[in-house]
Image (cartoon, rainbow, N blue to C red; front, side):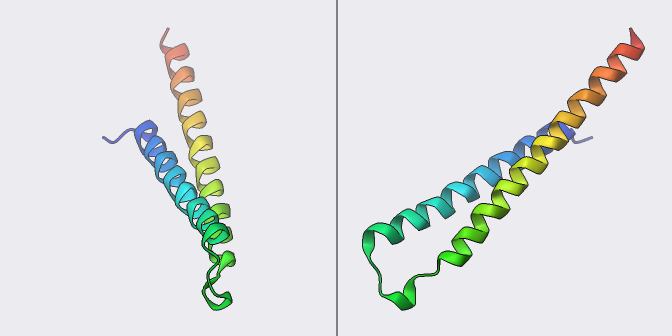
Length: 77
């Protein structure tokens, strides 16, 4: 059985990487001064928002999993 803890941790790592990539794209746009037709901040902004939401969702799953495991242990003790 795959643990919800490892799944949510992997999801947080993936969301963090996507956030980092989107932030890097935005930083690159600010330094390289591309032509106006090459600038697309909207997709980078959407990636930032999505990865933040994904990270928050996986954090909530992890917290819920840990709370549930604690309750089960309390019942067994």
